[in-house]
Image (cartoon, rainbow, N blue to C red; front, side, top):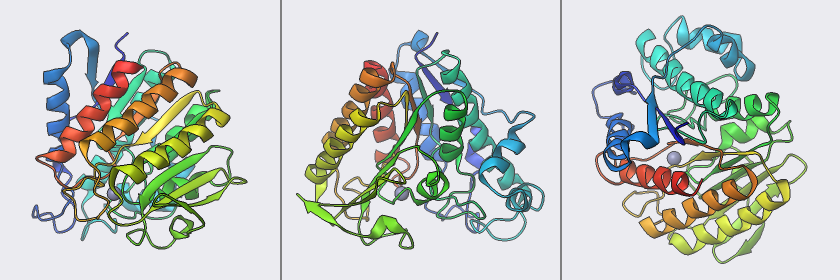
Length: 317
Ligand SMILES: [Zn+2]
């Protein structure tokens, strides 16, 4: 068994959103470069790269978290709010990205991998009836439900700078806990993720334990200290929930080089990755499903941060 499985295909490079002229901030090269870094830096026999192949039955998986009408709009008509006009080829790539996560879930559940990484996974803003924020199909919400169906206790952690509102909404009626650390005052602005309650050391927590969701709104410029403080608070909750598998939306867009204002450094990400690795080892026998989520320094920091996080979690798991 390889500890790490990576879902990637160069087909992902066709993911050109917006007008499709390359000006959209989501540049698919970030996924390619992250996988190149991992394959260059990890021992050859320690990982496998798998094709994100769409299989029979995957469409019905989509329809467990999205409406059939919405799935049809994307796959049959090629339409989405993330691009203009009819582009069925983009719908298919969105489907492949989802399939990448689905294949990783199968490997982890079967005990054939401990850590799964889909650089084009964790499309955390996608909602039941529509795409949102560059996210078309909510693979991690589906993955959490699938792990639960297979008898494992999943728990979702999201440190992308934008709140994991889609996952929270899709899992709110379940007992699956979701944790999101994100910037206050930035996208998305339309959910409970923005409210403030308890505060301390730059963190503002707004949670609903009855629905098992926990949000940590960080003020602008708080940097690693607030990030680490939120991870420590989450770790206490994870100890209470005692999950069997952790799902991680490992957005790299809180980095200090991004315009979002949270100013995390490589040390901040390292601390957070170590925390997830420790929790996965303590509770989950090392099982972690990692999705890239956001990151808008596609040729530099985004793939570097993703690769570091994956290597760190795999090393401990
Ligand atoms: Zn983001």
